[in-house]
Image (tube, rainbow, N blue to C red; front, side, top):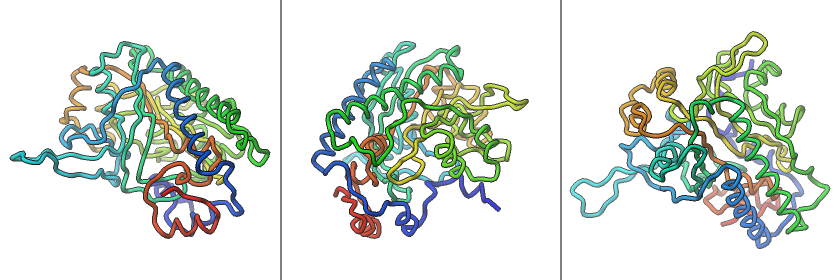
Length: 376
């Protein structure tokens, strides 16, 4: 019997024996550390410039620390298992400021649209850094997070799947073109060992995927889709309870809209205006998530989703009050994992080859044995 409930939380890998099996044998990086860093920054500059062009964004500064009372920090899920780092700051204050290290800038960005005076069709992009201390550290999960976190002002008439799809396709075109660009500048990336990055992205609703593979867990369904159907997909509708009684994945209740009814297909009502881009990683031979994004909640769907999640007390927080009182605009936004994208485009086996952070000795030992040079 498949335990679908257990599949909802966490990255899904829980032992280094499992990681050992995932990481490839006889591995040889296509680029050495020096060339890899040069290629990485070529990709970074290309994506930032072209993402801003495609989506009409401009780069802004983003906080690493927020106040606890603001409600701006992201809890990543609905069960409260991934908590932010907290500390008091402000030497000399009678009462220090209670602060948190950012886990994601999802909520801050929507408030920032007002701060920067963004009009409809205009938005912001950030070079975001965060710390997520409650991840199991494996080949593509790190405690240190880097993302292109972006947000754009929309109208209520844009809150539909056609608009979402158009934005996703634009993002994928930038990632694809970044891959083509870096291969021209770094010939070592041109190899028959791995297939090329697919130019086309296919779209599927989470309910459709469940219909195809009703007896599999969420991660198993995703893997089957990118193995058997297409190596690059966007899964729509993540967070709403599906036909089998479980959401495709737990998603926080106060940013993406996963409750709105969208289309009816085969007599079924589908929900959700959000989703994830998943690709096949030919190096690790695993599913690989690059970005999570969506059309954000309205004041009505915010209340519905918090009620569904048993978190109605959040409505008293400043961020939530700003939505309820129409003080911040309707928006669409997301986070594109920088190191995840570098890892995918540069065909590396481990996120530590493109990102410098802390790793447990058990993992470093496995990497050393497999000829994977993790940055320190």
